[in-house]
Length: 433
Image 1: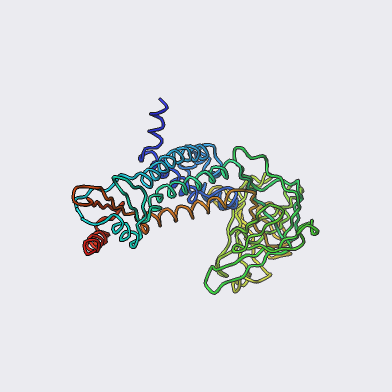
Image 2: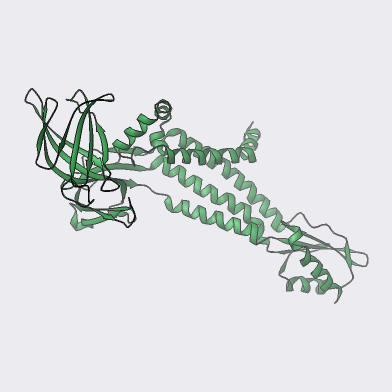
């Protein structure tokens, strides 16, 4: 039973199938928005656009795919399969290096053994075994290419498994001027099946969000200037951008592509109750383009649809005078609308609305993981194994004592046609001695 299970796990079909499943899962994780890295508005848009896929996405946990138990189980089976295959490759490489299959052949040369050995050493061949059958190998380490190739994949897969079950990821949505204490809940959290809840031991606030506009349309580079309370321990004011991550007290902080303007709006309902809401909208791609988001407010029966332009005059993205449009929607039917600039008031149906303030907001991802370095080490070992396979091909020459001299055999581990001239040159050189 165990032998059959081992044979199944180490079969080429099983290994290839597992790797295909892993790559397919990673591809799905890149297509389906991940909850931690995606804004609520973008996630809502995806959900609304894929109603048929939504039940399956929820059941399979595709919105937090890389921390699901089934993905960890897939990595575990793949790691076990590859580890067993790597052990087989190690034994195979050892046999080929030190005992070898031997090289068949029929060339009979009459010359002293010392002359043959000297000619082969000149060509880079190493004597691996002697006696009645002497075996010379050029580049014997080339036999270890497949072992390193499999070993590198094992390292990368095992490290990915460790990360999948121990990772801790949390997202924070911050508006300028706000500070989040350590005990505050995450906007969204994702952790491996063996990981404890992700706790921060520091407070963080957004001092300022700077959006640098590139030369091209829609080319933007957000930089968040953060404020940490523990200034004496590497805190104070520090910046993070998409191309420059930040490390703080063992936590890696990433700037996401989710950012924009947060509008602090005061709603006065018909019954006189006042509701203060912060509407976070994505930053527009151009001055004549709007940022959109829809909101479901618990005290409001209809859906609130919002959009804004960075400049009320539609001329620039760097204006401090944005224009906000609010609509009450019942399905696709518009019930009421109002447009506001900062400080202005208006009516939205029976609701009185005042735009109090607008500030920038952004979403940050904080990660505590270990094992990334092992993945990169695995990729390096994979490249090393591939290099040995294709650029350091072992060649063998055997010399067997026979009447009249030595019977010479030659073989190349791969691409024998490419190295055939080398064998003929050696035979010609030895005959001339």
